Image (cartoon, rainbow, N blue to C red; front, side, top):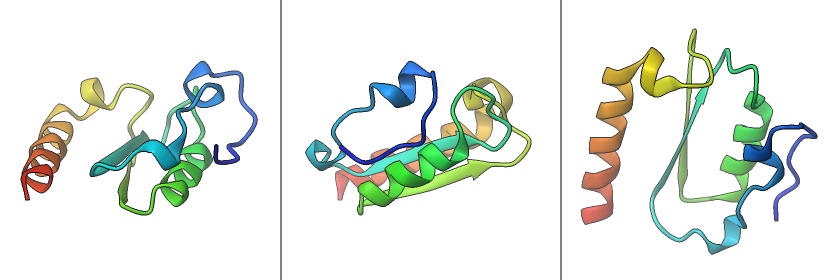
Length: 84
């Protein structure tokens, strides 16, 4: 498992084993997330060479609520990428 920054957040502490992920992956992080640090997203991205990291400025822990149009676009792009 990749080394991730210390945090009390279960989302980071119990992170999956990155080497087992073999599909296209988008790591979506709000720049203003107070629960999961951006550094954790960057380290996960580094552990998944086929991943894309998107850090949304002004967005908090729930990007689907703060930036629904952007999240929708990213989901559609990911589906299209997975099909190819």
